[in-house]
Image 1 (tube, rainbow, N blue to C red):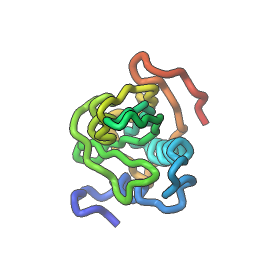
Image 2 (image 1 turned 180 degrees about the vertical axis):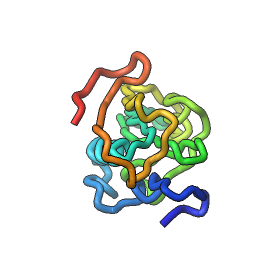
Image 3 (image 1 turned 90 degrees about the horizontal axis):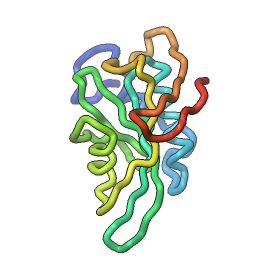
Length: 149
């Protein structure tokens, strides 16, 4: 099923993001396993995706680390999803710092790590494509390399 905002056949990003069988879906402290699996599913379908990990702090001085996935649709728009969201959120901006700030709405946001697969840049997830390797490559100079699987 395509979202009302999608018009190209073959763009499976929205459906992949809405899947209820992703480990960690709905949990309060399960953002990391959820984000890692969602990132894997989108990149295996050949889509441009980013695993974004950031630290946040709100005006009440509460703080934590959070992980989310940002993916690109067939129209070149970026969408964010975490384990608590019921549907993807359209994100303003074109880089991970802007996405994290927009998604979290916290007073202070600092990127911790961002991973992507450069081979998928400009592509949307399409499950009819041959399955791709999942690769974690640090975006820019943040984070550290994680093995492919």
